Figure 1 (cartoon, one colour):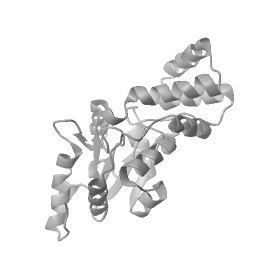
Figure 2 (cartoon, one colour):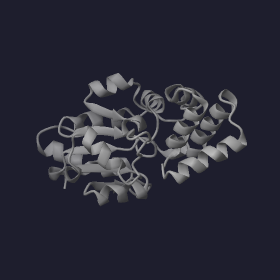
Figure 3 (cartoon, rainbow, N blue to C red):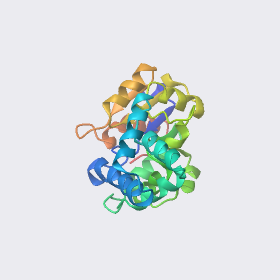
Figure 4 (cartoon, rainbow, N blue to C red):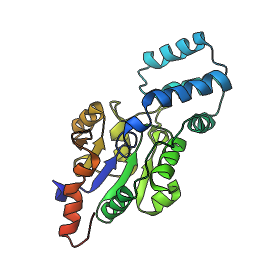
Length: 227
């Protein structure tokens, strides 16, 4: 399998770090704090916006945020920055070994992080996890794709949507059958397999460190060291 794969695609939350150190509830609470305190969105407005996104079949938290921002004429980027500022990233444990292994992988594969979250969030995760800015990460030949990279026809197409991974592959200029997605959501793995992409479910039974071993071993066989 590793010798047939050219592209390694990593989810961020729950894959690069355990979701238990920063839960989905904390992310949602940070979102609510922004639209309630900064934008003054009422309960009736929340329901109206939520019903509109469901009716249009626009999946994902950030399509909801996008509609809130349009409704209130508020900058989406500013919303995401305020949201990330409301989150405590301090419980994410730095992982220099993972950074070294990702760099080793990037010497032999096209490596990308594909997140359904915002760029400010991913930036704070990377800073806490690897002690590096996004520009430093990308200088290490690891590309970053946040939710904004999936914007198409006026809304976002996250990984679990019908065409989210197709849009990503086109924009990243990669072939699905030559790609492996590491994700902690079974629905995202199913979406990958539907378009011919390979998928590895990351879980307590199959942590990322274990899932990477065949790919790191493939590099070692080609004459490069790995940890």
